[in-house]
Each structure stands twice: as structure tokens, then as C-alpha cells.
Length: 116
Image (cartoon, rainbow, N blue to C red; front, side, top):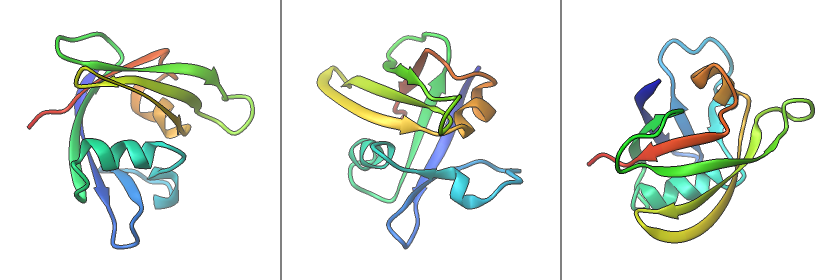
């Protein structure tokens, strides 16, 4: 699965993934615990960005690697983004159980690129 996803920062200053057709609470789509600060960085500190993501490697992608599977406790997993556009950043984040809804699994590695 390789797809582009829109993320946006609401007037509240909170980041969300835009998932058309989502039937759950918008609170479930909020990006928190490091995912929000990663989006600040990759958006250039604006209010919106598009990320191309896949659970399969593709040329030019950075990786976000699973560190801890938290499916049996809080859901989702702890991840680390080791680099961003070739720069070492070692950025830790938690991605919630919605990750499983998006990919169908909790991926060991998420490949991500930042289309212009």
C-alpha cells in the first residue's frame, strides 16, 4: 500500500490526519506524543502537509521504525524516525491504533516521503 495522506493543524494547534470517510471520533485522528512535533518539522512549521507513506520500501523514502508494539496495552506503537531528508534526527513518536486502520497491520517499518 503506497498512498498520499494529508495532515492538518487545526485552529487549536493540534495536528490531525485527514481520513475521508472516517466514522470514529476526530479525537482518534489526533497526532500526539512526538507525531505532532514531527509534522511541525516536515511541514516547515506551517498548518498542513502531505506525506506519501507505504509499508513497502520505495525510492527516496525515509523510514519510521517500530520500537515497541503497544497493541496489548494502549494500542498502536512507539516508533523512531532515524532521519529526515538525509539528516539524522532520531525522532521518537507514538502512532495510535488508527495506524492499523490505515495499513491493515501495525507495520514494522513505515516508509515516508515528502512530496512537494
